[in-house]
Length: 115
Length: 113
Image (cartoon, rainbow over all chains, first blue to last red; front, side):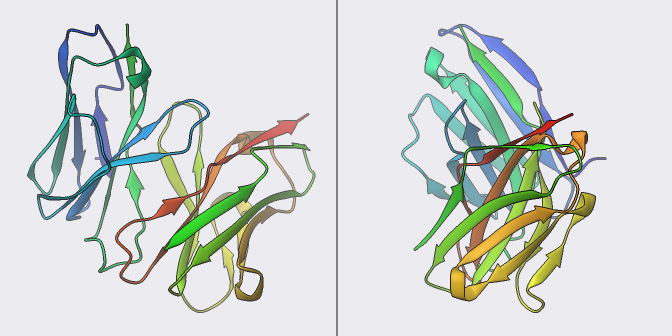
């Protein structure tokens, strides 16, 4: 099992669709993250969860809805997205924030295209 | 507060030449510093990190970086570039008790044959 697994790797959706991205980590970590990576833009931190509790939301539009049912799984629910939401969505995990070096372990990403 | 500046969004070197990717940071606490590499359509992979101790840090694939506190720098080097080194490289800063890593904007490395 790889450390952090993201599914699907590629997703194409219309603006009225509802879909979800899934992330699973097998590293025993307790912190999980969603990042957005758009072309020619820096990495954008979207959400942080520590021990299943959301600890950071960087003013992300409500059309992105995260869910963290346990420390190993993280979802990003998508609805009524816009074409500018097309990007690579990266999931990462780490030991709890504030208690470690901060090293992040990334999944391979989910490439989202919104038509 | 923390921040990272990567000098040069695009660096191009010849195969076999020295690779030097520059990173300067700002941190109000003793920094933890990281270099990540991202190959096309993949996630970020840790190349190396500095937390404490020896300031010259060796990583995977022949890369190394040196923490210079006086210059607030953590430049990444490799003596001889290989075609497989073509990728995007990200410098990041954290610190003991920091809530998250702060990433630079990335440097795209191109290797010319």
